[in-house]
Length: 257
Image 1 (cartoon, rainbow, N blue to C red):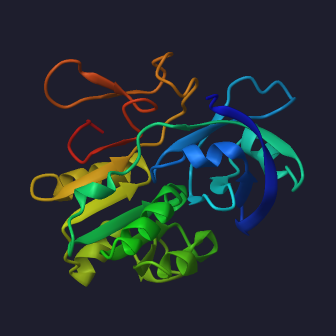
Image 2 (cartoon, rainbow, N blue to C red):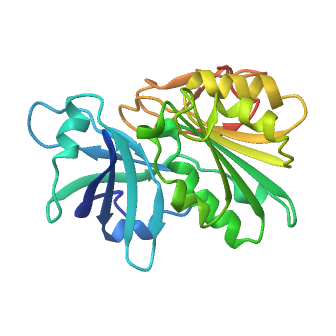
Image 3 (spheres, helix red, strand yellow):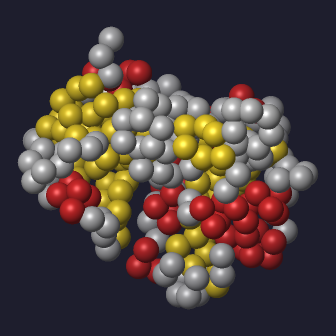
């Protein structure tokens, strides 16, 4: 079965300044089995050669629809923000390895930590863990009030706490400071966000907590052929892993950040 499909754009709306939610429909949605996988999107015209990778935010299998959330930060995403319902986008995916839900046992509590635009892939995970009967706590970090998105959506499946760096909404500070301030107790963590945040999570919890982190990289091919998105691996040889192929989700201490 081909992983490429011209999918129909159902909706493309701005959630917060420069943050868009894009909903697509197509047959290949039935292949999307894991929270945390990604797709590569082909943009037409304007000299766009390489596909753009985007994490899958939500999978709606009955309707054959899925969502991605992206931030406008260059010509490619600016072009994508202008796509309207009824148009079609060529989607390559699903790709990569997602979050292992089975790592969480019955009765255990999961802590989901999202930073900015790293938040979206955790949403599908929150829904699935909630449906399994696990307690889910979500801590999200943003720069300011204007950048906050999906708080209400996460609250359907989890206990939600928000931190902003300037204190304009929720807790003033970063996600780790908020977790410590709340004294949150959990059995396993799942995180996605800026590298600095993920490194801090490794340092804080790597020795005594189970967990998984999702890395964000520019993935040219999406299938591990070009080795353009490698990261250093802890332990024995081989010493590098491809984010698009062996990831984007890795064990908490599996790679060096």
